[in-house]
Image (cartoon, rainbow, N blue to C red; front, side, top):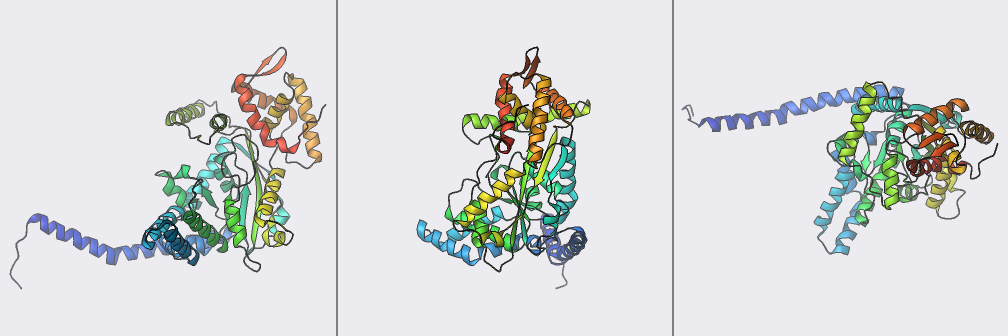
Length: 456
């Protein structure tokens, strides 16, 4: 026992490495995890003191534990058995598939990443790219909401900036959980998005097992009181108009609700922009007849470089106004008492009607619509038409721009002429071929507010 043993140097180092790993995994790592866990709990406690709606325990659960809870849920287990029977595969194969879906869907929320990094980035991006305005805000109704209810923001989808803008504006209310499409499942973006509490969904998955796993996650999050934000249109609007809703996520939420459960309150949100960053790509996708509007890498690099150069040379003056309107809340428990037909369809229709009501009227959409309605307007005639429209909309309590009509017209025409969408001639304002494609996209965003424009 006391005699020395001779070992090769490589074996000695291998033993040292195994010993170090064993020591770290059994003694060091648990202590480090405990230290950071306690620190995170203190951070969350401080956050909950200032948030209108504290972060729910469901959102703070470890991702591994949440995945296990999801795949062993009785409804998911039944779906696994059905899938195995239907496709004639062993149940363990179906279980592995469900587990893969669960890992794909379940986020890994980090309060530190969300409130320290995510909030600051959202605030900086929003204010550096746009003049941010809140058009409507029913303060009294929102303040009187049931504090124990699950809040779900329901929004129209104009731009990928929607995520950033709404996250920034509701940062004092709580942490939002978004449903994000497959476009964001790229490294390293996917890890950041998971840390911010978003969950991924497949837009075109026809598999029943996948839908059952997704449905149970959404239902468990809703039952757990997680504040969420969803886009019922199912994707970005290619035409600029507020489209009809798709019932997927809403059907999971409405179908799972039972009287006496935690109430669900939907808050309609209408968004609009003087300029959406990706307007050209969306318009081209609409002309092609498909939804493949991911820009090529060269276009992204060129656009970012051009934007940075404008900032460096002091020539960038925002993309105009980005405005958000908050509508009247819809309490699911009360609304279902008035429904006689399909409850999901009734809820979706009512919500999108309320969203349309609060979509802000901004200068670019309004002037685009006026120029398309009456081509060749002079600058003075356009100003008169703008004043008449704003007066008519004000009588309907529409969310309107805050600046005076003459400032709106001058600033908007400068931007549209600078983009090559208009040119000013002796005969009046002329729409260019590029403008003939782009202006309808903006005009469509407010078309539902007034099907017929008032004359001067």
